[in-house]
Length: 237
Image 1 (cartoon, helix red, strand yellow):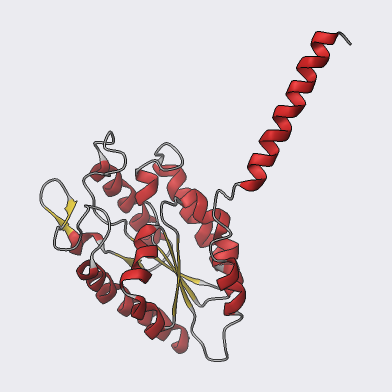
Image 2 (image 1 turned 45 degrees about the vertical axis):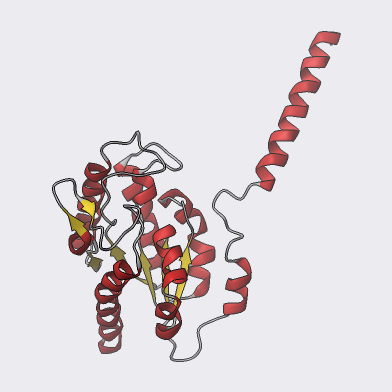
């Protein structure tokens, strides 16, 4: 083996080692975020109707702005800011299945449309949602799918100029899939959108994406009856 080749080989091994070390230190799906909370939660108590909310910053900030919503209703928040459906799918077992909920409420898609981790591909985003539904059903967890909230722009990536079109497309696909598979679909979008630009009503958002407390009031008025309907149907069946 020539000296030059040996040097290149050594450099290559060093780069591989650095890459592996870097990858091991990164937690792309943030499995660490709720590790301790999940351990502390334990299994549902007898008669407990556990409901998990899986989502991005819209769900994450919900717990910050309206903590009583989760505490008073015995709901569990598993939102992580910035995440896409790709990351939801990776952490679905840890943050949903292993908690043994009766229902999971999935709010997904804003960051897919904003390309936070991958180029926007509505088929793949919907496929990730479908995979989560299939995992839930395989573990006897009922699913409620929700619409992406309206937005005409993403302030962290202003070069995306068709945000409203992307959101409308993904919402249509989620709704169609839900209807075809008899899955409850909760439409936040219609109650929060305004104007021809299809932005979120400024009454409900200060930054054009995330709800204010008034925005969460609207969402709560829609999602709670949907959850109660699913729970009631379970009791009747």
